[in-house]
Length: 230
Image (cartoon, rainbow, N blue to C red; front, side, top):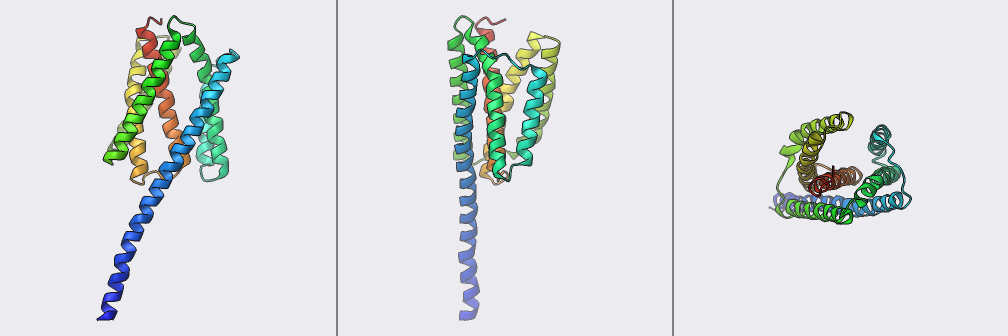
């Protein structure tokens, strides 16, 4: 009887341990992601503030795209090493620098400071609200992956078209679409972490940072338009 019961007892103990280890691993990814995300947001804010203070010019769409995708590639290549964290800070710092001239333009508008603060507040409210919802409900939003990928690609191409052909109406439409798409991406990525689909906190941090960055710039453009920005 003892020989029959011992394996069952060990198995009963092993299963909860495996489950506990899975939960701990997930919690570690969440903790590391939000810690790194907080640091990169702060670093990006500093570089943006320096860019505004020094009145640095915008590098232009070509350099911005090359810098962004080049650094994003570096993050993916180095994600499993300590150099990956350095690549994340380089990427987010560069994005903060490109944001500086944009903020400067809005600050030069009537009520520009209020517009920037509204965009920041709206971004924070959306991110915190959606993240809290994904964490508390633990719903699986993985079904959104394909839709988000196609939607972001189409919106990105439309955004390039709006820039090169200078179509304000299309630009505003793209901004509105990005608010929805980035909100969906926040839900998707947070859910992905919770359910173990994303186990690398470096990549998770970059995804959430890019979501927040695009959400802020899109809200900034929409609010600027509603306040009379041409």
